[in-house]
Image (cartoon, rainbow, N blue to C red; front, side):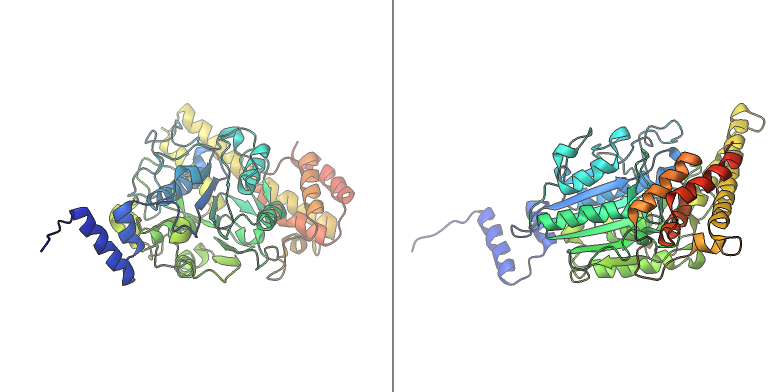
Length: 470
């Protein structure tokens, strides 16, 4: 009788094939045996990701920390750098105020999340034009940066994540070219009509984030969205100095944002191959609202037909297990965290700088002036918008009219050209809107919805701002 000798490799392959035949071969087993890949299978296409931190300045440390953390999750999950496009100003890691040079953390106990992050669009190349062109895969429209775009096909899946300040109908960008909701929706519609993705998931961390999609995003574009807040409320910062769980003592700024920390710390303790988008939505919604009036209402928009997809189809495989956490604090990911409202986080940062500087020093006086100016500016802006409301709508109805929130499911404004025109009119006669000032963007939307014309606002603004801003 002939004898046959089988190599150990052949035995391993036979064992794997047997598991497959019995439907017991999980993605984890496959990844362990052959390595992670951006493709789940030949017919599922490539996973793409666009990560956007829309702010700059050390006081906004948390937004770039969020984005860097997200990159590490995607990278560990098997996505390739060629398929991950990162937009961030990149002025935090080596900022003179950073107590840990070259390092960014997103959790008080966390490790470095900055290492290895691609610098695709930084500084002046972090623009709305480049962001929308990258989403569409339009290299010809890109100005500066790496030139990397979402060159996706009909079987590909796309994940987009934005973290920064927001306002009614607008997401802030650092180079004075903010992203308006209608421009984002128009870009998503073009992408849909191009047929260059199978499904898309969008996560947005910002104040009034729901206003980007409410009444605007159809349910049949194969796009599923969750937002940190509804159309009329703030989002919240976490891991802030002086508030438990506290930042390391050397930090004067918040390290993360509540909604963002919730979804990332969730995926780091669960199996992304079995946890679904819908399940994570519920976890994040519960945790983000746990603080009551110091939390927000996580919302979902768009196509709910595929929210039973596993997270791994968009964020990568089960490589994000608990023993590989970048942020050890993630092990308590279902526990409430004390939070600070986004705009108040900016003031907290300035107060901490004052307290850290030696009393009587030049730095102390400089920081005290910065804090005083920031508070004074807020009071002036609030007062100006109240006066504009009264001048346009009358003393009795003015304040209410500029703050009125439309009923659920309606867009913040009907005429986006009018909205943009009134914003520019205010900028011309008063001043460019600061991050804080943009919280009043609803006033312009309500004016447009009420039929207020540009000339009317121009007259009022020129009179009021001539007094308030001189």
